[in-house]
Length: 421
Image (cartoon, rainbow, N blue to C red; front, side):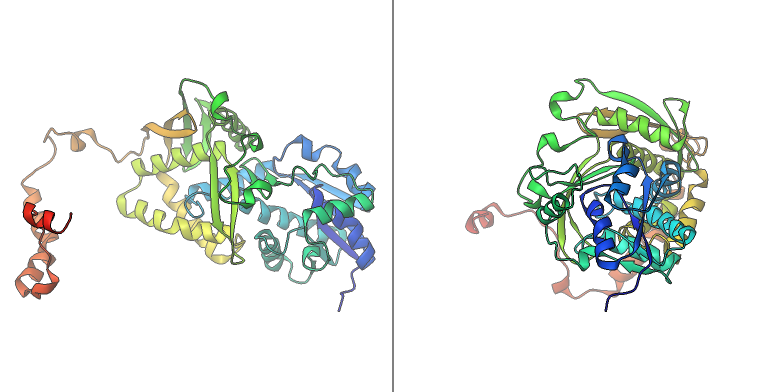
């Protein structure tokens, strides 16, 4: 049974899906539609003319917010401090933006007196979960409309035909069916030729990172400064979150840094293939992980590394506002109290590698690390080894069934020949 809706606030990007949702909502629900738009750094081409386009599609009101600072400061950088990388490759650009956008969409709905929230996420994707879990966490009383789970449009070709029938201009064409998501942290590409994982990503598809033929021949070194795990400067120049990330995107992008081609595990149970460009984020991750190794004691460093995949899973799965994610953040931020310093990173041919680091809280002591025995009593090692190896000695004295013990012995040349090895 279809719900009665008077006013719906749609998370609107101006892309193909959300453009056709405006008239569809009016046709099928007879409701007023407010378009909520957010600037998370996707660029002027996506934002230019957005209000006029939304109104032409039938929106009664359009709300546009600049969320670049809170996106980088309150979402990207906290995940960076946690070392969050999904399945070892994905730096979570889209996953981090969705809870912020959805939370502000809820704010817009409450302000507008709306009784429903709508989004353009497909029924196969992760974003539907990210948006709706945020709705559940912040406004469980509002109805949720997900057109891709209701209408008879089943492909992007169908969506293009619907847009054409209703006179809705869209930038996406039949010969460019990539689904892209852009923000200050990254640019993602899905669909099109990428749906076959055997296909290499077409070089012209990339937009943030230079290909091999356009990269500088020589490496470039940059220095990134951190205070308590928060990026604060590039090459000695203090910058705000947005300016810092923009600077790194430019510097790293021209060296082709930050490309990731990944077949990943979607939350909804299938594998999907995405290509991600995250130039500045890749540099920051490399630099901060290196600084952590300099400043954190082993047990704390190890525990942070163990929790990082759990944190990444929570973000990927739309659980940003969960109590567990917030608790993990508290742990991480406490650990970061001493992660202050500078890291020099070399950029060259698609790679970002930390090659130097300094910190007022360094745990590295040259007098202890050098081969010079000054400041260290080697005699103390004997007692340490005895205590550390005590379990091994006890087990050896207890005795072990012979068949469970394997001792490596030099191979008999004759036996090796006989067995064809």
